[in-house]
Length: 403
Ligand SMILES: Cc1ncc(COP(=O)(O)O)c(C=O)c1O
Image 1 (cartoon, protein in one colour):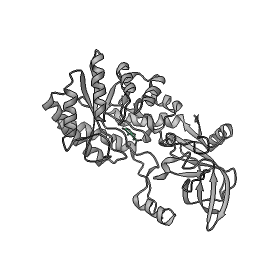
Image 2 (tube, rainbow, N blue to C red):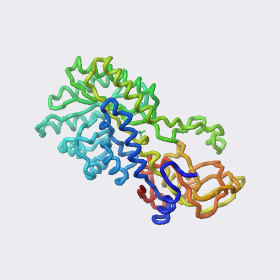
Image 3 (cartoon, rainbow, N blue to C red):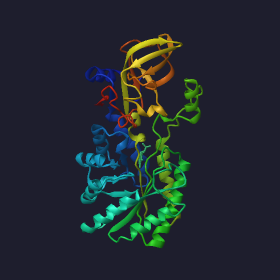
C-alpha cells in the first residue's frame, strides 16, 4: 500500500541513494498543505497570516518550500531567528516567541525590525526596555497571555488573575513600545477550546485598549491544529503499555480535521471580534504539525530479527531514541515497503539500535513477516522528529526531498 503523497518506488530510490535512517520530505505535500491552510483562511483575507513554527521541523529545504508558498516564520530562539534571516525571510514575515530569548537575539530582532516580538518572560521586558534607550524608532511587541484552557505551566501571563493586565501596563508604560499583538498557544486543541481562548483574549484586548489606551491590532493564536494521522496517546493507552508492555487493544483513530479546525476557528474569530467591537483586529496562526507532519516520512531498515521469550523483535537502524522522539507519547502509522501480499503475519516489537531498553518504535504491531533489509516507513515524521533527534551512539538520520 502506498503512503499518501509518497510513491513506494520514490522512497526506495531515495533510500538506495542516501541509505537509512532517512527523513524523506515531499515538496508536493508541503506546498499542498500550505495551499490548504491558505484556503482555510482566505475567506477572511488572512491567507498571508501563516507563520510556520520552525521548531516543528527545522529542515532548510522544507522551510524554503513553505516560504515560497506563502509562509512566514515563527521562531523561538536565536538559532531559529538566524536561520530565518539566513533563508532570506523578510523581517516583516518573522514572529519571535519563546520563554527565553537571549539579549543578542532580542537586539537582532529589534535591529532587523522583525514583525513582532511576543514578550513572555518578565525579564525579557527589562532587556527590551534597555534596547529602547539606544534605538530611535518604536518597537512593536506582543504579549503572550494564558487563557484558562490549553497549556498552562511556565507559559504566558494569566488573564484571569490579572497578571496579563499588569504586564500590559508595564509594556505600555514605555512610550517607545507599541503593544500591538496578543498571543497564546494552547497545544493540540479542538475547535471548542480555541473558541473559549479567543473569547477570553478578546475580552482582555478590549479591556486593555479601553483602560490603558492601547491599540492592539492582532490576536496571534499560535499552533496546535492537529496533524494528519497523529495524536497524543491517551492516559489509558500510556498506562496499559506501561503495565502490560502491550498496546491498548482499542486503538482510537486520529481525528484528521486540522484544516477544518483552522477554518472553523477563523470563522469564529471573525464573528466574535465584531461582537466585541474589535472590527479591525486580525488573526495570525503558527501551525507546525498541520503543515509538515504528513509531508515527511522516516525510512528505517530492518537490521536484525530475533525471537526472545514470547516476543518477536525486529531491530531497525533508527529508533525512538535517535530518530523518533515523539513516539514516546504520540501515535504514527507504520508501513513496510515491498510486495508483502500473501505473507504470513506476525506480531513484532520494533526496536531501535541503541542499548536503551525503551528504544522502541512500536510495541505489539501485526505486520507481514519481516526480513533483513526490509524498509519500513514511519509516517508523520515531519512533526517534531528532526528537532528531537539525538546522536546517541549513532548518527542522526539524513534528510532528502522528493517531488
Ligand atoms: C508558540 C508556539 N507556536 C506554534 C507551535 C506549533 O504547534 P503545532 O505543531 O502543534 O501546530 C508551538 C509548538 O509547541 C508553539 O509553542
